Image 1 (tube, rainbow, N blue to C red):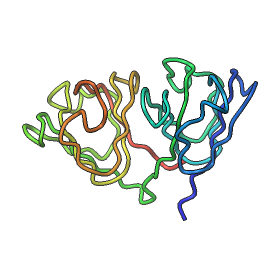
Image 2: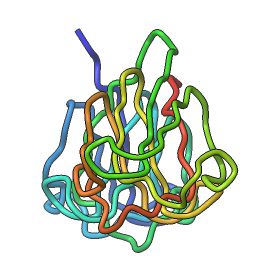
Image 3: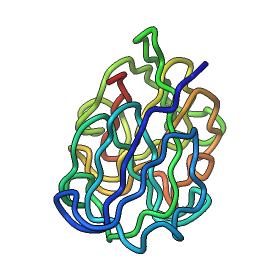
Length: 179
C-alpha cells in the first residue's frame, strides 16, 4: 500500500492557531477546516499543495520538513485549499527529455539531474514539450527554483498547457526526491 504520509496546516506562523492534519492521499477542499495558512509541517511524504480547491491555482511542492512561514514554500499568498500526496520514484532514477518545439519537435535534451538555470543547460529559454520517463519533476518559472511551480509526473506533455503553465517559459527545474 502506498501510504500518503502526513501534512499539517496551521492558520498562523510558527505552527500556531487552528490546524488541520491530512493523511489521506488527497484533500480536495480544506476550506471548512481553516481560512488561511501561514505555516506547514510535513511529517512524512511529499505533497503538492494548491491555492484553490480541487487542485487549482498556484501549486507548491513540499517535502518533509518545517515551514514556519509562507516564504519558506515561496507562497504567493496565505491560501492553501487543497493538497495531494505525490508518488516519488523509489528507484531514485530520474529521466526527462525537454523539447524546444511543441509536439516533441525541434532540438531536445535529456536530463537526469536538476538544472538551476535553464540557459546553462538548454538551447532555448522555453520548453514547449516534455517527456518524463522516470521520476517526478518540478518546473519553475524563474531560475534558482523561484516563481510559479509546475509538477510533471511520468507521462508525455505535448505542449506547456499540458503541465498547466500559461506560457512555455521555464527558468529552472529539479527532481522530486524521496525524503
